[in-house]
Image (tube, rainbow, N blue to C red; front, side, top):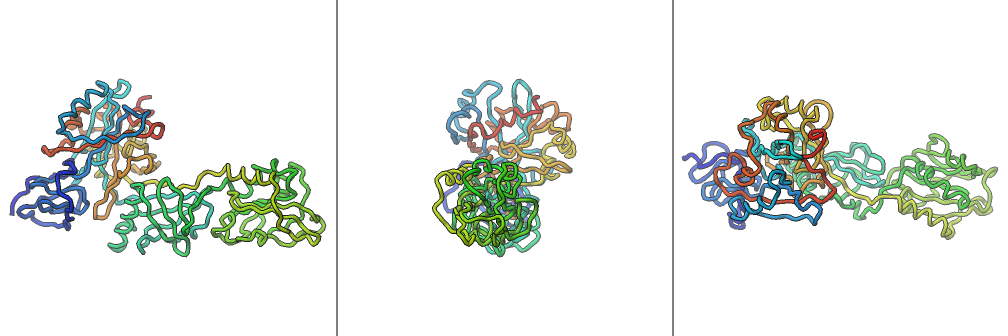
Length: 532
């Protein structure tokens, strides 16, 4: 039994060429470190890794008795933000790196160190791997950079479609395991909540691994298929159209049926005698609606099945589904009852359409007041097309939601509550991989971020199970000192770029330079109210 050469996993990255292909993953172990192994303490698993093998998280390896990090630290460069985004790879021991630094401005380099690849503060008493001093608009700044190990985290998924995917509170399954649920629908979108501490740690090992795999996959901009209990199969991928039961969605609805009536009522005036916009939530009827009344339209005598809410607005006209307007119908006439013969007339022109315009049919009442399908006039078709024109493309949005706990905050200051207070006082800008994070009100630092605004492959995992996500706290140097920050570990940007994490023992560090797309993210160091 020997003492390993290095037990400080944090911040020991290496180039991806250090180890040969085909490395095997080591099983997590506890107890004394045996000859030829090193212990990784970047997370609570404490893998003991043999030479030439990688840890359970695939992020650390034993190279010649030295624990090394396999993936690079990611830096953002503002230098070419208006040009095509680039990814440049360099090593900290590369002879060309000083030239790269000289090519940037002398003090305000437009370089931001992200938490991606930076490593953790585990076992929690250590300062963050990077506490970087820089300047922004002439102001002395500090950015505290780390990777957080998040057990208390989830994904909130917004699916732009009026299709019914499943009942509210229905379970969402991945790999046969319950990993989340359907939550309240929003305007034109279905919503899912995935992951969370109870799915990660409160069930079986398989359930925790399945939830972790799904969150890791979706967070890193990749596709995954989920099954909703008694509902649809949905392929999800951030920034892409959802695929519902094998059909790629095209449009997000323009609004509910009532809203569509109000938006296009004037354009239907004179072309239609009646319009019904079919919707699972609020089906609209033009002549009864306030919009039709204000336009002095003649009552049509139409009768709608369902529960009348207010004039021209009907609930529960059909069951939810993937048909017209998010209902289960394929024949729109099925929601109509008999017409009032005292008000309806032969030749009455009826348009029935969905809230996206993807379904639309034109009818004329015959002598028996029965709607007969006929070819839709071009002028009416143009208004239906306009409904579609006003619909936005159907997309999947994935937001990471996590709670920054005490261990993560202690990497910033010896008194973690001071950081929480400074965040709530808007003295600190919180980012994840350089992307702006929304911090929820109330206690703690509960943050939410759009994964598409983060660099690709920002998320990692540890088999506890937990998500590894980057987080950065940027503030004025004076404010950092006032909140009791680890001032003895503040280093210049040059020193951080040249040497890597503060506890680096000499292993070469790999860098990846990312240029954020122009106009997507504000620059993290110049956000109000920090610089006013």
